[in-house]
Amino acid sequence: MEDKTIDIWTERYRPYSLDEVIGQDKIVKRLKAFVRSKSLPHCLFSGSAGIGKTTSAIALAKELYGDNWKSNFMETNASDERGIDIVRSKIKNFAKTKPLGASFKIIFLDEADALTPAAQQAMRRTMEKYVNTTRFILSCNYSSKIIPPIQSRCAVFRFKPFGPEDIKKMIEMICKSEKLKIDSSGYDAIISAADGDMRLAINVLQATAVTSDDVIGCDAVYSVVSVLKTEEVNDILTLALSGKFMDARKKLYDIMFVRGLSGMDVIKAFHRVILDLDVDERSKACLIDKLGEYEFRIVEGGSEDIQIEAFLAQVAAINPVSK
Ligand SMILES: Nc1ncnc2c1ncn2[C@@H]1O[C@H](COP(=O)(O)OP(=O)(O)OP(=O)(O)O)[C@@H](O)[C@H]1O
Ligand SMILES: [Mg+2]
Image (cartoon, rainbow, N blue to C red; front, top):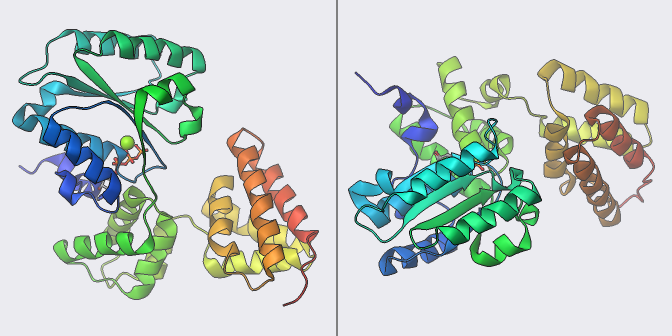
């Protein structure tokens, strides 16, 4: 019988070795040097979702340990809802046993930035205590949320989001192997929905493939993902820029509610489009500046509706000079 996990394409197409990791060449080069020297410092992998942090850590473990990798590698999540104490005791138990056929084991701690500064202080002691047998790879979205003493104990690796070319290459490869047909509007829609996140790109492709039995085009993609299309964002921002705040707001809300978009989805869609808008450079700079502020407010817990509205209100006040 076929293994069920294989049905998930992100798993089926997850790179096995460091050589197969796409788009993170400098990082792969540094990790390979660790494999050659069979040594590893504590590491901090930072970067947005779905760009290869977990993948690279697992590939590194496979290359370091060969067949023994599973006994020498543990993956755990810092934001485990049962609490950091469980995580710490799990770490302790794993670190206490001897590495198998190697001089150290690896603990991969996902979402390390979810730890409070106090919990990070405790982590720092744990890292020191077991350093003879254990190396930590901490993974986080924002390295600025990791306390400086931990950062200074780690080699920091900044993973970058994928450009359109890398995502297209991956989608092409999967389409070939799954015998799917896709047209250029389909590629563009997946690339814009993924916004640099390879996991999202692959998931969108799989969801689209299930629901469409023809050539995959942009409509099939948009029917499974909730994104704002480029033309829609263009219309909304143009309305707002011409001072028509209420119209821009209505248009945005109509789309947001029908497709169930979050405030963050909207911010990301705006970000994608602003640089190509047909307005003068000063207005673009102003829009990006405001967008950054409202992104921060939403991340910090501000009400999404109010923040998005406030952003549109600011846009309506910009008053761009015509080009
Ligand atoms: N560099 C890459 N090369 C090839 N495929 C990749 C790469 N990065 C991600 N993928 C694909 O996306 C999936 C998710 O990647 P991964 O689990 O490594 O993301 P992550 O960076 O750990 O994200 P998160 O922060 O959400 O944990 C992988 O299973 C793989 O299919
Ligand atoms: Mg991960």
